[in-house]
Each structure stands twice: as structure tokens, then as C-alpha cells.
Length: 111
Image 1 (spheres, helix red, strand yellow):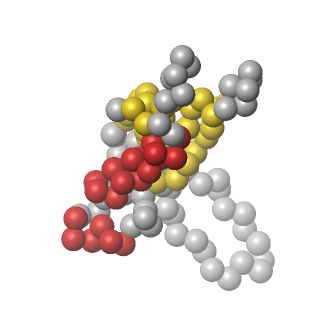
Image 2: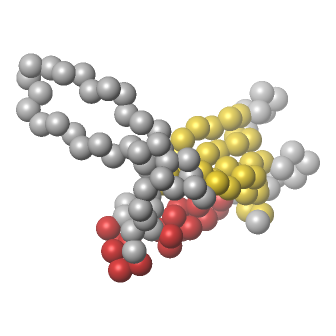
């Protein structure tokens, strides 16, 4: 799938996530050294990775719930070098958590 801009590729990832019942966040970016243009953008599941061990403070009143579950799902959008278009470079669908159902997908944060 080809996109004219990086924003179109990111919008595709967010729409895909909303349809299939999970939220995303933009993880990492790689830029070309020659002109500084973004060459790779990673759009990952919002449950990707693990949170660092919580720091215990005496003034901590509320514990935050565990939201990260080590999910490996990600979509990578890559710049085609000879053109100024972006493509879906890699796609990994392996979620390690249940997804929301279509009836409750309005609870996700994706636009």
C-alpha cells in the first residue's frame, strides 16, 4: 500500500487499529542523514513493552494500573528512496492481550 505523505500512512495505521479494537502510539522515528527526512516511523500497540518498576515514594497516594503487557504488534511505515512515497514496510499482528469488540470500540482513544 502506497501513501503520498507520512501522515497518510499514520492515519491508515490509526484507522486500522480502531477497526480491529486496539489503540496505538507512535514509537520511534528514523531520519535520513542526507536531508533529515523521516525514513521510518513505527506505529505500535499502546500495550507494547513494559513499564519500569514503579518508584515507591512516601507521598505516592495512588498506584497506577498496569497497562503495558509486552505486546509485539506494530506497523512500520517506510520512505521509498527513489520516490517521495511511503509504504507499509512491515506488519506484525501478534497481540498478547484481548482486543475490544466492535460494540465497545468507541472506548478506544484512536480518532
